Length: 105
Image (cartoon, rainbow, N blue to C red; front, side, top):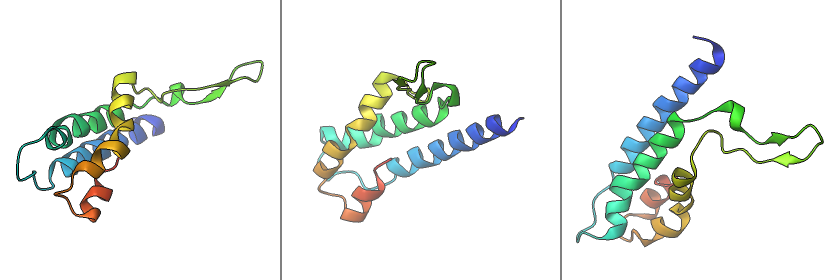
């Protein structure tokens, strides 16, 4: 396995550990959409993003010097889920501030 492949494998494993950790905080006392999102969609998006990393899809410059945004190999739906974290995690009022901070990917 080459260096890049090994680094991507380590990143994917880190993503699986992060997703497991995000699933581990306490559940809300009453079921709610935020609790379901934290237990399901967010950890799934973290695992998907970290497993899909592609160094060839990073930001760069075109031959004429124009900045070209890359997504790092992560699809738009996964990026959308991850970008919702700052808006959704603060609504998890049953979590301590430390648990909320650690839930951010």
